[in-house]
Image 1 (cartoon, helix red, strand yellow):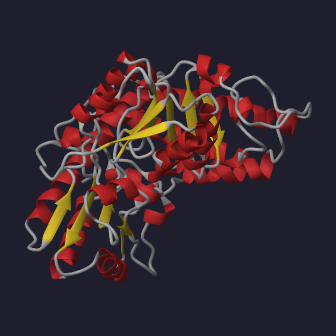
Image 2 (cartoon, helix red, strand yellow):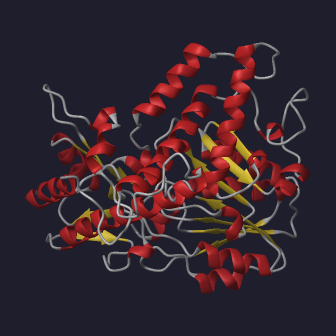
Image 3 (cartoon, one colour):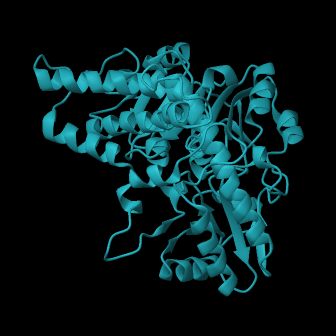
Length: 430
């Protein structure tokens, strides 16, 4: 019987989900690895792989030509932009920018914004960040002579909102904050941070890389000015995504070559993009939407709705309800299991009864074994986890985890209760 998420009308059929991921299917020769390495890059469903291969095989051309393959690539761009707009929660696909990864896109934007800053300006960053949402802004501020204000965190890794409010003034030009920690899974109070920043007239940049595979994004409703995420964290290829408000993308001058278009989004996309990766990004979003469409056909939500008539945006709403509920179930099992093992310390929000304050990524340390030792031992047992700071260096420093960091277990909707139990048995045996 398929495992379903509890306390939800939108079940996850885990057997059907896992059958779509080639890396999760067992064979006669080997048992599949347990993939808790999703925060560094999720596994990829067959439809995404097929979209990448088909693009390279069938329409391997550049954009802007009069011939059919070039026009086909243009259609892929348009369709993928519309799909990403639905995923982000914006009605303007032209505000979607593709690039190699979130870090490169953030450096590009920070360099362009920094041209407008001066010594009288201040930039606010937090200690809860992945370094890609910290150092680019610090470097741009340094080059402009602007001041960087750093905001600390609470013991559970949550940004200190009182401290944030105290440093934001009329001199603040930008506030950069992550939506969810890629190291400890804590969901940040970013919506309140946006409200605080807007009262002072500051721009807000959201790092949604780790939020995107777990929760529904609604960027325009949130009131942010920029957002970045990465397709390879939500089951797609290695493609970065940047969104910005149209008036800002049109006004700010990016560094670009002269022949490149001045129209958005092209003025922000340097050089030839990964066309096959963008096709795969479109397929990844359709894969997520199909989870929602299937829930209206097969689940308790009522079988009267045809998956063909459910809009992509509505289907994404349903999909993330199911994903969040199911991942919360697994995260609870993991948190409670780790808490019962002597010598294990959970970092971040450790209370399993506060699912709204975290996504299903859990970091822990062991009293007698280093994070690298634990990760190596788990790898020997076929369990994939990461050790170290996972590039969340400001947070790892603030939590006192340097130089070794922590063990990071990243649960996604394709994981199972049995896999969580296998991990817990392995950790307990240490």
